[in-house]
Amino acid sequence: MVKPVKVHDNNLWDNFIKESEQYFAVLSPGTKIAFFVGESDKNFLLVERTEGAIDSKFNVNSSLNMMETDLFFTVAEDDAAELLDDPSKLSTFIKEGKLGIFCLVDDVVMAEKGLDKFLHDIGFAPSCAI
Image (cartoon, rainbow, N blue to C red):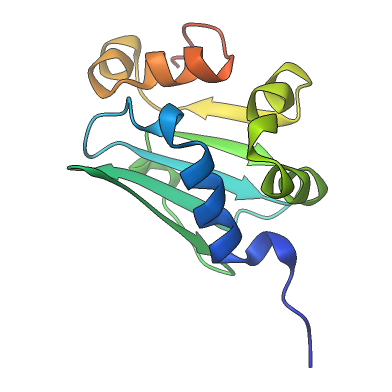
């Protein structure tokens, strides 16, 4: 039997979201963020801010239309495993360049959705709009 890859464990990602909730709480309902893990775009965590909740699900060998997200991150599998061990390293990973980021909305939408505050709080520059 093949042991599941740690970074594919939805329970660990749920814990990551719970431990990082203060960052995601500033987002407006309907905001979607993805974390693509590894070299493929087939394994990803999808985080959606809903009314009163932050929903997340890790998807394995799945597909996502990136244009349906507001922004997404890329992270190597080894770094994702380290982040799951210690969610407080999120800001450190940003400073070390271990997270790639792609914004799919402009500055106005970023402000409306709370993405500018989210990005500022986790350590990114105030604007990354395309």
